[in-house]
Length: 256
Image 1: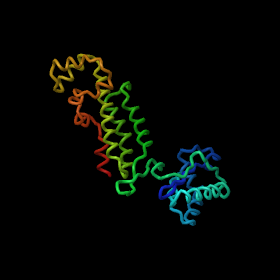
Image 2: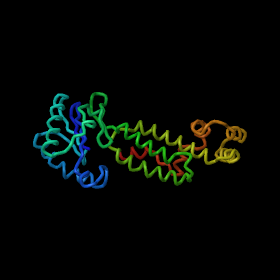
Image 3: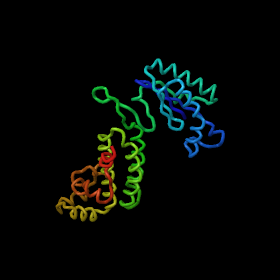
Image 4: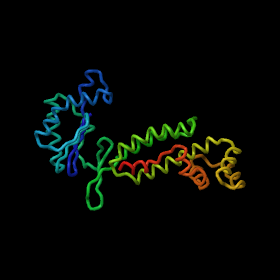
């Protein structure tokens, strides 16, 4: 798949099938970026020759132009070049002329700050993919220890934070931190299982015995109880960090 983009407020997005199919290499495999670079080296030279501003990674490429009209013209021209010169099929379903703030490139997108200054942001689909992975390891029905769960969680989030550290996203990461902590509290609550165990642990963490007994007998569901004031007082952010939870926001500020 090749993605071409446009400038001021325009993006060309294209998908193409490279020769990796002919050599039985599935797109997305280890050889796909290498084969894409070999096949699209001529495209890079052609774009440079025409004086276009562009960026390409493997088969994902954005071309920047000054207007939508220019984007349409370049789209048709590059499409003809790919199909006739390079003998590559353009996937028009993944091709478009649109504003950069509405398109995704390598997980990133753009937005305008107050005053009209452009800046990099993390695309919503990147957040969604992260949340899908986090859901799997914070599923309270997954019968593993909290230490192992937090280890797998760190493996997912560490690389993600460092990769997207160049983009603006502190506010959304703060919300993600809160969401992850709530899921972890639900996991802890379920691990305690028995009423006596819940009561014992709540008292140990500073809750009055009578209040702890009342709370241990609650019939509220795990997700609802995970946001309760008592669990936030007992399974605090600090205690979660002591057990191995690493805040996305803290790591983000360390690299941004």
